Length: 65
Image 1 (spheres, rainbow, N blue to C red):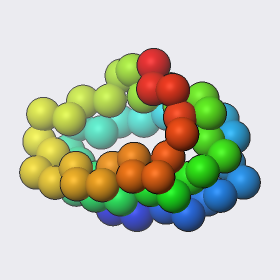
Image 2: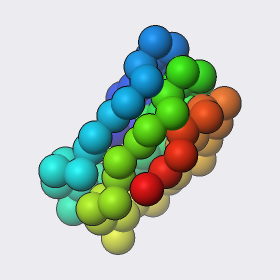
Image 3: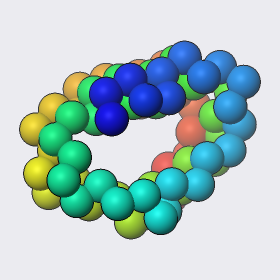
Image 4: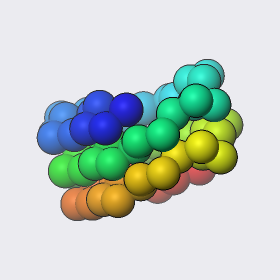
């Protein structure tokens, strides 16, 4: 999932509550520079196996729920 939504500058709302992240190991830069993002739903993210979350939301304005 590295850089998955990076620089999606017009993205305002994102609901990822149904994403299965059980086997994800890399979320680096996933939401970086999503400057218009105000609403981010990641409440069901399973990050148990994630090894790298560096800069996950760098320069992102979202309110994480």
